[in-house]
Length: 149
Image 1: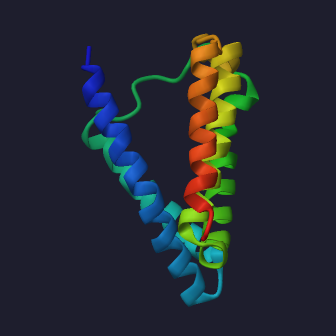
Image 2: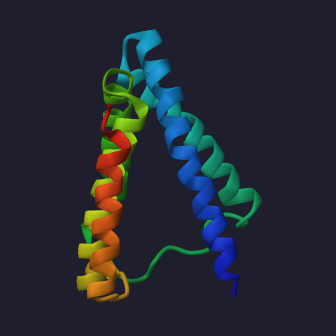
């Protein structure tokens, strides 16, 4: 089993990459006058990398699921596309910091609901008073971070 510190550092690096990706893709979309083109480039590069990883690291697709999966299992792509198109369009106009901060706020809200109810196959982690206070502090932090002046 991989150590939790590794997971924490990997997710920290991922978090660092999100505003960088938003700034790069926002600039690309602005330069070409098309957030959809910038998103397409991002998805194409991402497809090449993920297929390369699938074969080089995982050795290809092992086997298809023998159990029929609910259609909503495949909706992750919808949310990725919605995020990429939104951030690419909004970040140049609203600011990368503002855009990412409100994405973070949305993530905090949805993760609390998903964890508390064990939605979409996630393990249940009840929303305790301690977690609620932590989320409240993080939410206030988001608003303080984007406030100008």
